[in-house]
Image 1 (tube, one colour):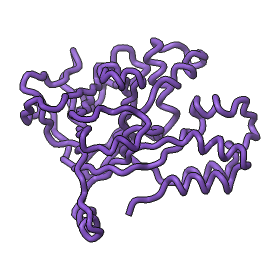
Image 2: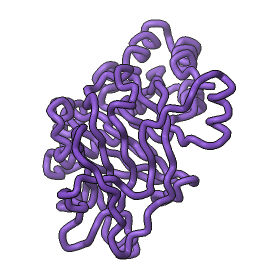
Image 3: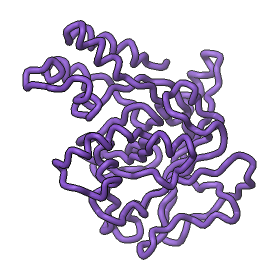
Length: 292
């Protein structure tokens, strides 16, 4: 049964925050699509409820790419590893507040350290390393062929994905929170320990399309902004302003079924500006990852 994150987040805000602040915070919530692996148990539950699990994409396995599409490579490092694909026509993207393509397929690749034992890091703070992650968009109607993994790359275990709408909350130190509530003194209700603990207890989606990212450390939008601004000092005020232009495209969590472990139970994030998303300029997406 799908969990109702909307009710949970509205309830905790109204229980732990003053009424005016609770409603303003609720106004910052955003819709996302939680991606969940389809297992035999999942399909059995769906069947019992008279529904069928709709496959919207998959983790791992081998990608089907156009015949003339070269496998993504980080120049001087080697080929990237295929992480996930999403069928845009199958995604219930009408529930989102971002403009995903109506059809076609999105492919996500990442240089995951298989070829160099993790020596090269893809990081927003390593100039030039963004070539180690890639988003490819292939429009509908293009003939696709399953491609073998390059030498030295072990594909992840394939896991089919289904999607359901989820309500997502902003990270408490996200620039959008500061914009809404500034100035924020140390005793601001959003910093209240009971509210923070209640928010922590609402389970995250794990794999996610759209909505607010679920950072492991700090807001990932500021990391994307740092890339866009050419890695200025962390206290540069432009970072907070630029971060507001970036939105989550996809978040891929560590996943036991797929054999994916990003550092110490971390997650991968691809972010994009809304105008680039609307124009299908996925080559302008920015990558970051975090772990505990």
